[in-house]
Image 1 (cartoon, rainbow, N blue to C red):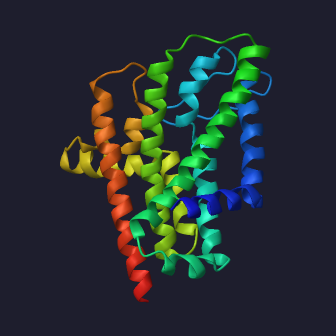
Image 2 (cartoon, rainbow, N blue to C red; image 1 turned 180 degrees about the vertical axis):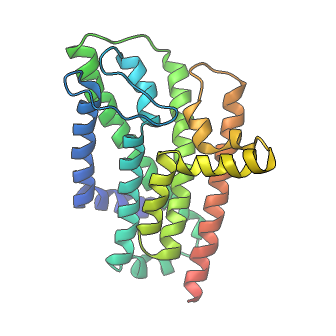
Length: 251
């Protein structure tokens, strides 16, 4: 798996879509944090006011921002789709007998994209909000690391289903639609209506989108529940990907 990861890293650094994604993310971070531009990116649970917000507030905001999630997930989908359009999948996937390692290696690509674009957000917001505007704010490093890791876990769980739809359809259209349904809360709204309005069940409170948006700043028991949901969803996604990849070997 290490050899595959090295190969993936090389491909990431040399594909045009990654460089475009880095450029777009850099520009959008500047736009989101400069009061003179004042571009707002609001979802049901994410809001940052560039006029008065500080660096610490932006750090908690960007993982829930629709723009951040769209760019990360879209770049990941484009990367996976390129494996089909270039024929890469025919030369590699059938020869990897351990489908668990194969699925995990694909998700590690998602983690890399997430961390790289997070780093871009942190660096540019530190410059624009912290050093230029002088609004640093206060933050607990330990609390924030825990918050960030769990946000990454929930996002990776969504990434596993994006991967699944790529393998099923061999195109990026279905996964792209899922990205926008998820990031703008439309999918969550559908879940809410289905369970709460029709059956009066409050299971929507364990939906990944809801948990990601309402994730607390301080360490609490809520984190444990969120981690369980994230790990369970990620496990289901990996399992389904393994099944699909094994069936592809029989085609």
